[in-house]
Amino acid sequence: MEPDRSKIQPRYRAYGRKHIGRIRQLDRLSRDRLIELEVASAVLPFRVNDYVLDELIDWTDIPSDPIYQLTFPQAAMLDRADYFRLRGLLMGGADGEVVRHAAREIQMGMNPHPAGQMELNVPVLNGAELPGCQHKYRETVLFFPRAGQTCHAYCTYCFRWPQFVGVERLKFAMHEIDLLVSYLRQHQEVTNVLVTGGDPMVMSSALLRKNIEPLLGDGLDHVTSIRIGTKALSYWPYRFVSDHDAEDLLRLFEEVRSSGRQLALMAHFSHPRELRTGVVREALRRVRDAGAVVRCQAPLIRHVNDSSEVWADLWREEVRLGLVPYYMFVARNTGPRAYFEVPLAESLRIFSDAFVHVSGLGRTIRGPVMSATPGKVLVVGDANVNHQKVFVLKMIQGRDPEWVNRVFFARFDPWATWFDQLEPASGSWDSFFEPSV
Image (cartoon, rainbow, N blue to C red; front, side, top):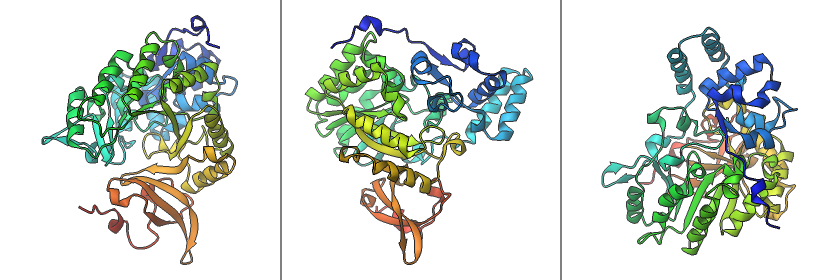
C-alpha cells in the first residue's frame, strides 16, 4: 500500500561542528566527551542530520553504537600528541586562525588523496588536464560534479575527507559537463561513467539532470552504464520518497533506463541497521521500480562492522530487499586509519566466515578488496607455496588492463593492513606492475 507521504515529510536539518550545541541528543554526553567531540571535529569533517540522530543511532549504547562511531569523530581517531595539542589551544581560547592552522597541519599528515588519485588518474583533453574527473581504469571514468561535493552526513572513515575540509587544492570538482562529454567522445573504450563525490544525491534533481542528460547524447552510445555513488539511501532516504523533487529524480532514473543504458546506484550500506527503517525500504522500492539496480558496498571498519555476523546479516538483508552485494573494501590508508584499520588476515577471516553463511545470491560480493595505486587487489585467501605461507592476491581491476585477473602472492603478514605493507613472496613487484607501454 502506498504510504501517506504527508506523514514522512520531515524538514531537513543538518548539523556540523558549529552546531554541536544544538544537537539535543548530546545532552546525554558527559562534558569530557563533548570536549573530545569538539577537538576531533576540528580536524575530521563532521556533519550529521536528524534522520541519523533519531532513526539510526542507539543513544543508550554510546560511544559503542556503530552508527555513532560511523558519524561522530572520536578523540582516539587523532594521534595522542596531536589531540592534546589541539585540546590545549581550544580550551585555552586560542584565536580561531591558530586553531585552523594547527588542524590543517594534522590533516596534511593524514595522507589526503591516497593511491595517487590527484597525480595519476587525471584525464587529458586536447593537451589540457580535466580537473574533476579521474580515468584510472580503461572502461570507467569518474566524474565529480561541483554541486555534489558534500554529503547528507559524513562517515568518519571516509577516504574522500579532503573534499570536505575547505582546501580548494585538495578538491575534485568539475564545472563543465561539456568537457567530460568531449573527452568521452574521444575515448570509445569507456563504457561506464561513475558520478561521485561527495554525494551527487545532495544535488537538486534539476542540477543532477544537467549533469546526467548530456551523457545520454549523440556520439555516446559506447557509454552503456551510468553509476551514481551515494550514501543518501542510508543517511537521507527521504531524498527518494518525499523531498520536493523526489518524483523528478525518479523520472530521471527512468529516462536513463529508457535510453537503453543501465543505471546503477552504488549504495554505501555499512551496517544492517541502515536497511531497517520503513523509509529506507520505501526508498529502495521506488528506486528499483524506476529501473535502477542497487549495488551495495562498504569498507570493513573497526568499531563499526568488524564482525562476520554483521556482514552476513547485512548481505542477507540486501538480498532480501532485491539489492546486489558488490564489494567489501579494506579501509584505505588515509584519515584516521589507525582507529579503523583491520589486518588483512583478520579481514579475510571475517569475510570468509560471513560468506559461508549466505546463499548463492549473496555471493556476488567480492572482498576483501584494496583500491590501491595499481588497481583493485582482491585478497583471495592464504596458502602454502614452496613451504612459505602467503597471501593469494588477484587483480580484479588494474591501471594496466593486462594486469586484470592475474593471481600473485605476497608473504603472509598477520599485521599488515594495506598493500604497501606487503612484500612479494619472491622477486619484486616491479616486473608485475611495470606498465606494458
